[in-house]
Length: 270
Image 1: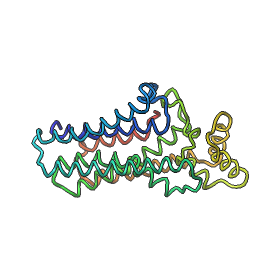
Image 2: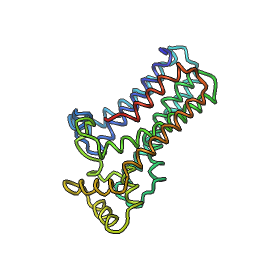
Image 3: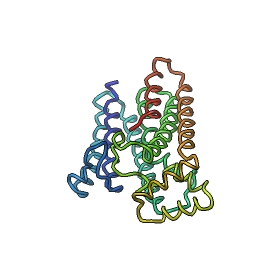
Image 4: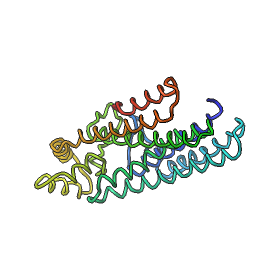
């Protein structure tokens, strides 16, 4: 375990780099009830902090050599993490671009989620497998496990971003007010008709959605069953992830912590 700890640190640093920049791009004042970096120190210094974390991630990977990891594996690890970062940036681009569009399909959404969120979870699981074994098939199974779980995680996050309690989520701003094209909203825009369709299109054509308009969006989404649809789809991806985990044929005792983690990500309320 300690031999691959630098890789785990690298992934965590990339995760936090992405959160710092994400808070700037979304103008989020708080994260988990605490002021965001840019809110405390300004956007410029927050960008610097995020960039520093990005750099530290690769310095952490270089410490794998001190742990006895071969140079070839270190080079491949750098490539794996870099490709995941590239996907993450593309997913974030799509997320921001979708805020100003009303023609987003569920397929578009899933493509964005696979990049924005699932790419980092996929490299988290596959990088550990790669450094801990010589079995390329095992690495592929773990990559798919992380990818499927990442999409399930993002869908759950979407549900919390609309219906979650602020005291639990730590988010002071609803995804609706930011016109985020999260899965329930995309489903609503695709499946609404008549006056409901007109209302949603009108609201999401505004620069922001506030007050009673947020309540109106929730009312329409509830009527369309968008929340239940999102929950069902999250569960589908969760079970797909477990299928990939079981395909690794690891001992039950070694699968158990990962299954527990996957269940936690699906059932969380924050």
